[in-house]
Image (cartoon, rainbow, N blue to C red; front, side):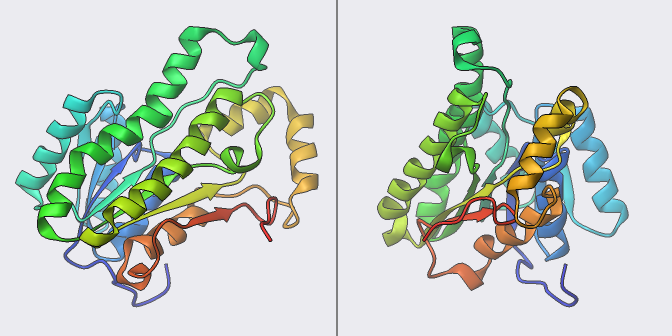
Length: 256
């Protein structure tokens, strides 16, 4: 984080899938910029550890268990955060899951899980926070999509479809909520070193080598590389930006 930046002081942020990886990096960055952060994750024990680490660094954080596939769970999570921290000003939809395999080898059970977590989870969390944001006349929603949703990705057909859906959904939501001063934007990671990708690296090193050759910056993304873009969209610096999609991919994908 740049020294002295505290753009989010007094704000309350709910980050899904925040126990580890990209979500943890986002939560850390928003907390460093002054936000009270709710570490929401289905892995409650890991979320508790992450929140404890942030609190030991003098930051404001709390953990809570959240299964984003449940609308009732999302509503309950928002109520819990608001009782302890106050109204949710910032929602970061980061929770995700995938299974790498060719589409013809995939099964409906896998499709359902991928859709439920990656796409329906975004719908549920947005549904849970938007009424309060509308009543208060403002808010920030930042959803983590993927460059897989912009250009496709081998072995990730259903995941790519979900991530493309997040982009279209967010653009529509941005139009619907602009009058309420609610900004809705999207951050698209390129290949980023997370637990999922490390598993691919261990099993298919040649796939990663080929991927690296296609990245102009010649390295995989790190979770921290995404956090700054999310912090920007969550801050007042982005008050006039809505319906926007930014790729953080080391130059792998570029739009004219």
